[in-house]
Length: 223
Ligand SMILES: C[S@@+](CC[C@H](N)C(=O)[O-])C[C@H]1O[C@@H](n2cnc3c(N)ncnc32)[C@H](O)[C@@H]1O
Image 1 (tube, rainbow, N blue to C red):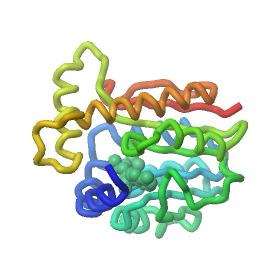
Image 2 (cartoon, rainbow, N blue to C red):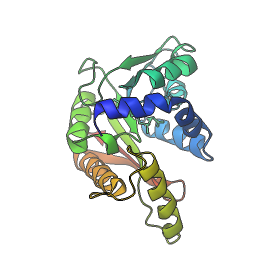
Image 3 (tube, rainbow, N blue to C red):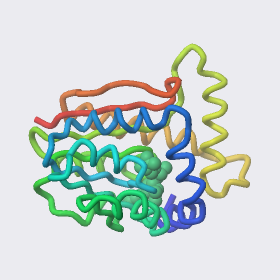
Image 4 (cartoon, protein in one colour):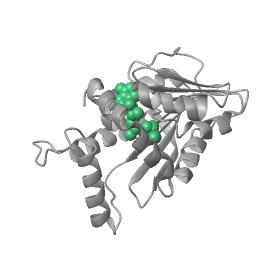
């Protein structure tokens, strides 16, 4: 997916995506958990790459408190408008910035944690992005990834069928029924590459699955 396709897709569906991002059963619990996996202290600075409509931002703000800083970065203006309305307008220390997560418009020092949920599957070089985020947080900092990928649980077949349908329907062009390289396969490969690289770069602080095994959460502390 190019940046332009991403912007067009999420721009058009910002309202619907926001509902899914906030109201899917169990998702609030997951967002609280990913924020906790960032191992933040009051006063810390955390950056969320591809923050979308800002569903994680209040949980990150809860972790850093009024003295800390939360920065959400996304390439799509309409989703950032929602993130502004629901988080940045509510808290003085939550900021949203338009930018590319692979070249984030932020200083390369002073960041305690980077979070990216449901984003690395859209990047051409997910492992390279993880390397860059790890470098930015530096020793003692944390990088946390959460992504939907096919479940390996015993009840997986129906869950995976639903997952595959969601991926196909949410990947433009949604009308295409046969792909040379199916989007759910590419998504799985990118997610694997990102989580594997994070595990290689850091000591594990979280290695879990959530929501019927469909969401993988990996958190690492940099050495
Ligand atoms: C599936 S949504 C996830 C949003 C949010 N992280 C969440 O958990 O609800 C993916 C988001 O990543 C953004 N995105 C995709 N590629 C990006 C990039 N290279 N840089 C910044 N944002 C990107 C899209 O605009 C979209 O808002």
